[in-house]
Amino acid sequence: MRAIALIPMTLAVVFGVSPPKTASPLVGTWRLVSFESRDENGGQILPMGSEPVGQLMYDNAGNMSVQLMRPARTSFASADRLSGTDSEVRAAFEGYHAYFGRYAVDDQARMVTHYIDGASFPNLVGSKQVRAFAIVGNRLTLSTPPIQVGGRSVTSELVWERAEHGAAPR
Image (tube, rainbow, N blue to C red):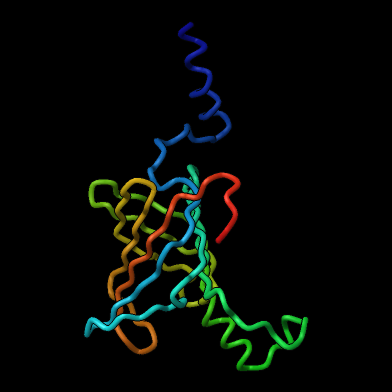
């Protein structure tokens, strides 16, 4: 019986596979409920409008991805995505933000760090983005430290709701 218990550990050593980690409470798929920012004077900013759309995913292997979108983005006049006018491309870029990479959680400090491998905003690639988090029921709140957006220092709070399997996007 003791030998059977050693098989998973032996396989992990031989094949370089890590034993499963303890699941983080962040693991799963989350749907965006709200995205609000405040500038240094306390002024409210709604970066993706009053009814933003988004999805955040964390897996047990330490991978993450996030996508945020202004829902009423205008379509390009052309069906060719590379033929947009300068104003069409700018509006599309400003109305959509996404990145993916790895993450690490500090449960005691209630912080999650996103290590960015790819992003719609190229300057984020290779960076780490630290977020405070709180989970209450099926809601996750992520808060940013002050960051520069549109020439202003802003802090943002994003509220997410755990997605149910098969639930249609809103």
